[in-house]
Image 1 (cartoon, rainbow, N blue to C red):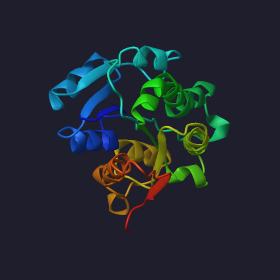
Image 2 (image 1 turned 180 degrees about the vertical axis):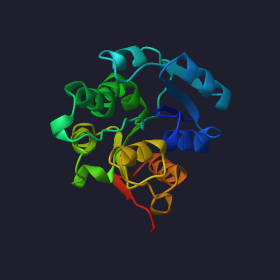
Image 3 (image 1 turned 90 degrees about the vertical axis):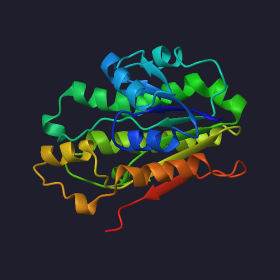
Length: 225
């Protein structure tokens, strides 16, 4: 059975992906704390759970050290935090947190897992956002963090010839994070204009399970509205 390390399985797209793959993949899931770990164990009893906070400085090393030394076939970076704040009123630490969780720790986790991914000729998938190329007022932290992550994937793809590197880039999704960002911008979130988390999870699964002689560099999925 192929093995996947997945961040963000506690909610939204990550949870939908874990639901899709729990019967056919061996899952290693990241929990932020013991409470989250307990919930993941209850929902995915056959999965392995590691604990770590992506916002902490040494998160990548702490998390990677807990991942079993067995074969690792794929890493999906799905966890992220919302980053809606106008530059003028944005707290410095807020920007640092958004970049740490959305960009720096995923890249450093990839670095730590490279030897195992190379050995398996595995796959890395970063979950991006169409916000990376859109100009939404007040979304500077989030949009630029996703743009940086997508560029990281492009460069890593050029550097690493033995692993597949993909970006899945969704548009609006009906998730708690999207609703929170809309509320911060004093906008009403309309679920009829958004995709379900499972639709995005389907796209990630397609990338993961593409034939081994192919790679989907970047897959953009948007609502059919």
